[in-house]
Image 1 (cartoon, rainbow, N blue to C red):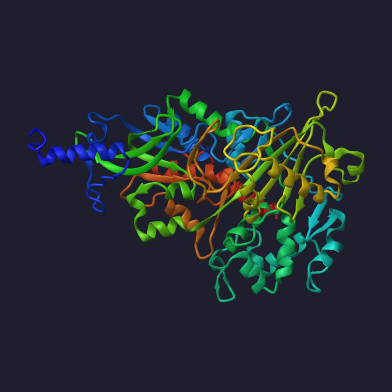
Image 2: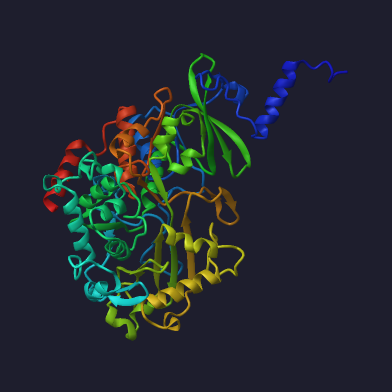
Length: 575
């Protein structure tokens, strides 16, 4: 009889509670009309409203959190990070038995003379840097192209045999062909600055083309394009991106650059930012991934934002409240969030303006630097990289500066695009584990290591037994298509693309501005590398975060426009 007499209201409340606990319902009241439910619906009473909630503990999120807390001392600022570590796509490990260097599994260097945010920030944080040697001038370093071993000094002559180049392209370096193509496409009066995206080429604006489109339309030939991309070591740099954005990147980098890396690794940057943020009064909640953003009303009728978040440690949902929200996330991570502002075609199209790239890195450590054996001395490999068209696309070398103390060394194998996806099936628990591996999201298997060693031997034109067996291995895959999971011995894993490129057809300077606030009715802002003007670089993450803070929080720019003007002048002189 008691249950029979329950009112419909009571039944509704009970169902709502059960629905929340099961995370099965959304309860977006007034959907599409900006109406808000009471915040106490989630909290069951008074709510703790933050001035700002930052989502994402990568360089963009930690930079934004630090700058807001530093500038707005009285603000209550909370940072939510989905995993159990700060850093995002900056991820540094210490190789066992090696203390003279670190291995970066994400971003690993920066251009000190072309990237003012990185230069100024590292100075501000007192983070020491070192030279990151690419060793591009080593004429003896090996290439393995189209099943043929060669050295850099033979690249022009042998490249002529391997690739079906036109007569006017023969006996030219890949850089020479690329430069000639750029000069043919870009008018002379625009060669000393990033080109106008709306400049008409073959009847359409420059931004409508991919690099491959434009290269072939300009009589470049498919073979010459393969020659350029194969020798670059990257699958993603030239294949499909917006041609105007690649030309802008070319003009930014086509010069003598100072390539540096933090001594303690790239993730020392967000870690120090997070430390400074908490010391200034900010709070960080780890293992907490945001699944939904909505609006709700507090007791005085004011609307605030309510963030539904799943905590991997407790296995429960929790709700957080803020007056403003900053998302320092990748494209796919933003798209996983249920949020009314993403329900219109316009907003979805803005987010789809970039393409997500996959990448992988494999670290293998050895008791001795096998590449310094007598049979390989002619390659003069002490640093830098080897380039191959096998799935071991680039191999970087790291060896002890003091062999009398330790001779232990390691290599880092980098791949992107389709080459990266070659390795992920081998990083599976279906295969026998490699004994020298550490707990990680992607298992290092004996099959993966042996295949990598086989290819590395081919790339260096030696027998596999010359290389020997590594004592340690670590594999990291950056691919947004994996499912979020909790990995035993590692912690929560939130899948992420490696980096992004602008797609053809989008004016990237306009979209970059528009994405900062997708909907003017929502004080929710987006920053990060994905929609920046320096994609693939930590500089882009810092740049967009700084612009969000200047535009929406009235915080003075970290890098002033006068500094960027000096940078443009420097680029012009270098070009």
